[in-house]
Image 1: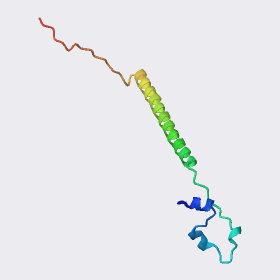
Image 2: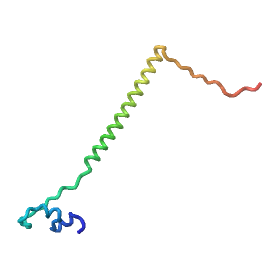
Image 3: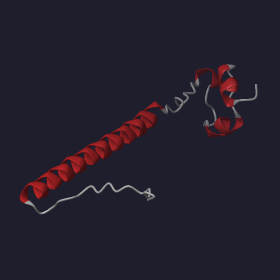
Image 4: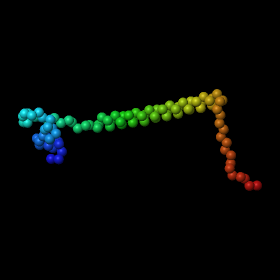
Length: 96
């Protein structure tokens, strides 16, 4: 019996709890209630939801920026404010 839980299951009262019991109390009628162990499921689920939401928001922002950039290029190309030329020159010299 190394853990306090083992002591309580066996019916023994640890010294720190024994000191808190008022004198003259019938020990056969004392009930010790233990606190339930902490559940980590809630904080883990909350963290996963926050991470997934953040990733979704970043993906939506990236998509919107891409659509806006495409629309700006299309408008500038159509109005003549933007043009580009592809120049494909040969880099090899011809020998005469």
